[in-house]
Length: 175
Image (cartoon, rainbow, N blue to C red):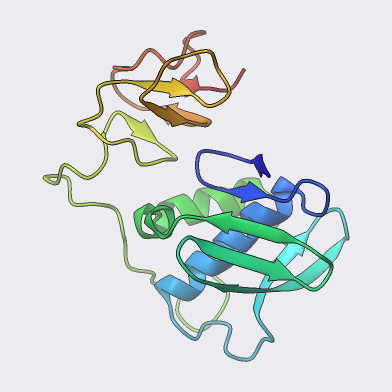
């Protein structure tokens, strides 16, 4: 298994991260707007490697998605619940999604799933992954850090409390 980011993992021999991220987007769209893909056989996700839309079938917790071509993607339900319409819009505007975007389907007024600003669910200094604000320390996945918690690529939007953005470019764990 290979980590594409802090949440999405793929079977590297059969699945690209670009496809996996598109599967995540389609899963979130269906979660946010149930039935948006009711006329499709599975969740439509664009595979840049194959150059076409593939149907992904997902279930469970963590969510496990399979595509007919051997594609295998997994991510935690907490990542889906933390994702919101702004995240989806930014992603779709900057990635090759094959036309599958938050504006696809019956309802483009997706409700936000961002944790309430007064909640303690996610550290507000980071975006792209939900970091536990009560953690003693985070280190980058694959680094020599001692944790206890680890995270993949994440944007720093406030104070970098865990010193994850060593080069100061606003993107942590990107080296």
